[in-house]
Image 1 (tube, helix red, strand yellow):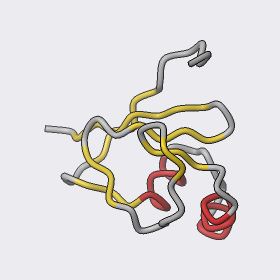
Image 2 (cartoon, one colour):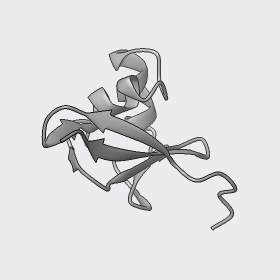
Image 3 (spheres, one colour):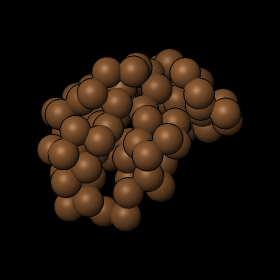
Length: 77
């Protein structure tokens, strides 16, 4: 695991967020169409595993990685 930078935190208001929404909120993609493309192309990992479901539910502590950039989901409480 050669990730040099620790994941940035991605604060969310609810208890979960869907993968496509999280990619946009975390500024990893510009829009939903780009989110769909990178997910379908197998470029997105969740907790180290390739994830191809745009609707995958993410919860506090889940880590999303795209192009070597990682964000960790954090619920605001």
